[in-house]
Image (cartoon, rainbow, N blue to C red; front, side, top):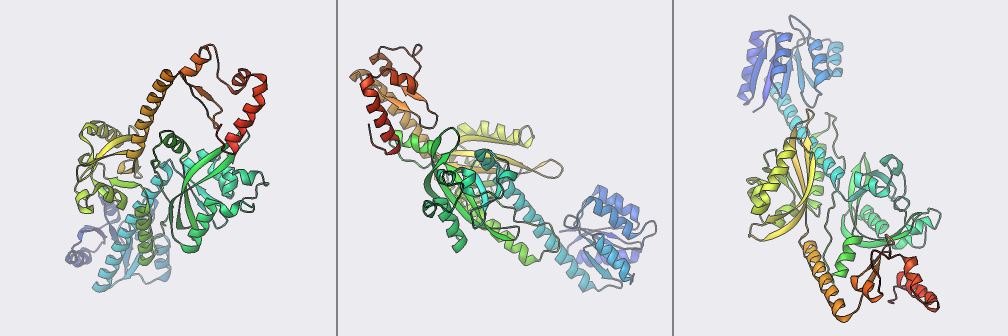
Length: 504
């Protein structure tokens, strides 16, 4: 049932309009003057206003000007109903923001059809704007590097995580080739010619973007690696890449997502346990427009595109109301929990939270609703329908309306059960290694190529009769411990290990 305000100085005409609309199951209210209409609109909300241009105290044109200063045409549609036949007045009303015009004496059928169509278009626009706000919030809050590129892999738009990774503002990144922005070693050593070196044909990023442009099909989490160069050092980077075809500002682009999994790969190799890195690929694009004259078919296409992208995410996304009850969730989340869409729609987030984690989850959610915080991130346990548990990395953000009130809450979840198990296994392995070194009077050391730092085990200091507080482990100090005749041999072995991957 929609609420419609009838602004008409003739009580008989107003009553006739009201009866027609009530038959169509609309709730109506009548204002016989302009001042009454403005007062009622200030106190109540309506889906449509039927406005007569000729009123006793002020003109309909004056009312239209006042309303359009506060409400846009998609928020508060206005249909002008008048016996005025002047095309100039009709054109003026439409230019000031009237959505439609009906000539008196009016046809009941035309009134019903125009009211129905305008309400339908308004509801579709409202739903589409909500989807766009959700996607924008996900895009900006995700820790995954995401950006739009054209066919030349030239950056068109970058999210916050991408700007932090590139150490550049979005305005600086726009127009740059992706290889130059990342500072790919091949591009840097070839005068910045990203896409023109002998190595570019094998580039995982470029091949993924080209494939998506050619087939209009997405790619999910292809693994690759490259070397990043800056003034300080050369860093080897492992990553996962995802792509999706997107229409942005009327042109075909590709939404590119890069996950840095370098540290996770190192940790899993040390623990001799392969586990997929925490996935946080969130894609976004402004898909919607605020122009009221968009056709219903266009809005339907945008809604369909939003659904496709929303369900294509390789992470769980759940949207709740301020009470914590689920109102939207993607396929990953539904499949991972084992519930149906209908079952989850009747649940709130506490129903799928492990009992020991409910209190802290509820406390943070309440702080979000009270606007004490705008987002938070936590690791917690979730309970599937079959009662099995899994660990999730959860990022939660609030969506606000124009008044600053929380209207929806977006949660992005990744399954980190394997990563948690890998960390636990690594801790056990390190403890066992230290104990074995004490028994066998052996030691080990590590050299971090990224940070340039050394790590010596406790047994290494004992074997060399050194105390950690008296000896700083650096490459230079370690070299001084060697016999002069062994320095060149050690240096060559060290270089072969790093660049040729030959064990020492």
